[in-house]
Image (cartoon, rainbow, N blue to C red; front, side):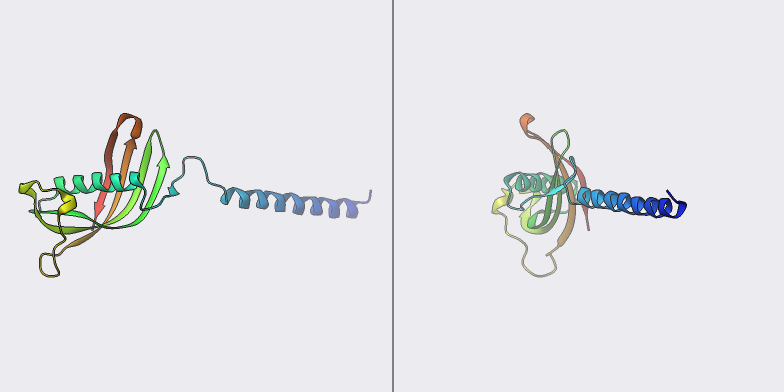
Length: 143
């Protein structure tokens, strides 16, 4: 075989091999990786329980005299890692209920518009091990 023909065949083979690698990489990008975070409905019962757990933790850490509760769940993801990790973007709003009365948070109304109304955007990561009936807030960042 002539050198020119070999060179052309080598180039053609290289192009085919490169395009095959790129095609496989594209396919990998479109497949869920095991252990990666996946979107979940904000109405999921596990999400709602995780939001309550993180909000309870926020209220315990806060020096505010009023309790806060979730006013919106903007985004929710789950990741399976030795249990379930909930990754949540939540708005929490100050309620009219004072901490020292230990009221039922579900029955607390939000502060009306005015000086006392306050809303935080929070990033929560809550780890749950359902078969042990255990849940813990691992990350709590509010602004």
